[in-house]
Amino acid sequence: MSKILPRNEHQIERALRVVVGLALLSLVFVGPHTLWGLLGLVPLATGLIGSCPIYTVLGFSTCPIQPSSKTMS
Image (tube, rainbow, N blue to C red; front, side, top):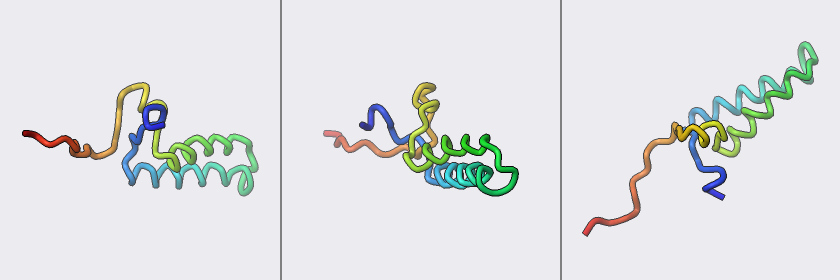
């Protein structure tokens, strides 16, 4: 599954995506009651999953580089 949805979002970015997604989604229920708020599902889902498909296609990542588990001999 990690090849399909690799972790490519930093923790802060994930939190921001969730907040923005919830804010946009609230437009459906509170405020102007517009269905454009459903676009908030995209940043909400990518924030909860931790993987952005566009980042994957472009080969981009905001995750900190993790050290390799291989030992040098």
